Length: 119
Image 1 (cartoon, rainbow, N blue to C red):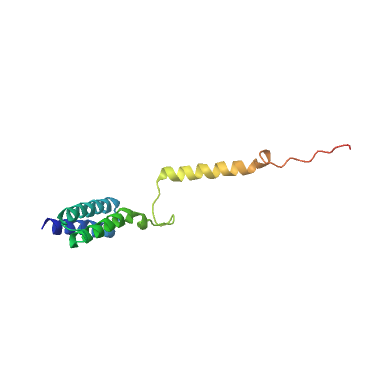
Image 2: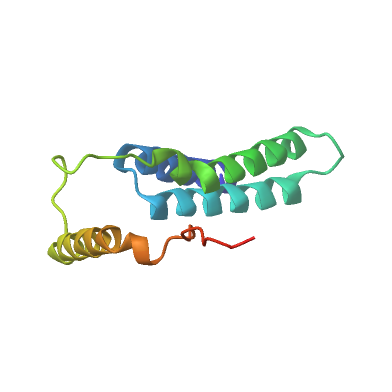
């Protein structure tokens, strides 16, 4: 019964993490799968028993749940999500800095004018 309850709890965390796209739920699911794997290892009496195989399955699910938040990363355009006003100010400041740098770029260029020599 304990193993079944651990499986149900871990499955609930895993499914809810994919529905709500929350990393905390995914890590809780990974922890639940790891506890279920430890429980299955402790219940196994012989190598390659059913519980022993389940333990390896749960370890695989632990790894999958642990790295699943990396797959949820989405990119959004500026029109889709509101931005922080501080970030907008920083972008404006950076644009002004780039304009000034481009205006005086000749001072920092690596090309030097050729000097005339009398040879």
